[in-house]
Image 1 (tube, rainbow, N blue to C red):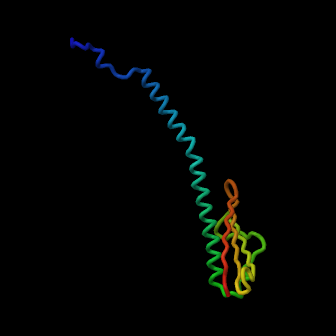
Image 2: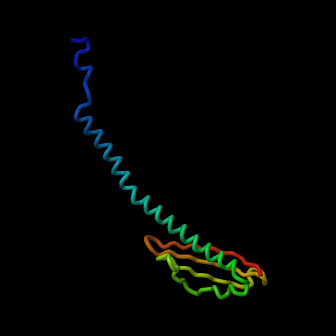
Image 3: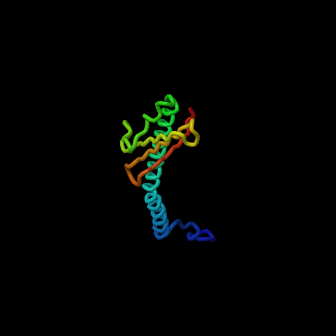
Length: 128
């Protein structure tokens, strides 16, 4: 027999394994609980990006139109955006702001799908 005996070669006891599995389970449950919240944040970020791009698209269309045609772009209420379910858009054209030869174009895009509604507003000034 060795001077240390068989006690020096002991492995993990069943109790130690149970405690380790318990703590590992707690960590994994915490991770699983946070996953839906993270997915919701990613989804809402995607909707916010889409709303911003739709607003930018309207501003670009307004920039490409002749100055006299801008008032015809105005919509009084939010109108559904074709091809983008849940998104609505409103365009306001305000003449003579800030000068008599300029127009202020304000585009508001709203998403009323999952979760809280998302509102995005873009404003640009177009000179004559």
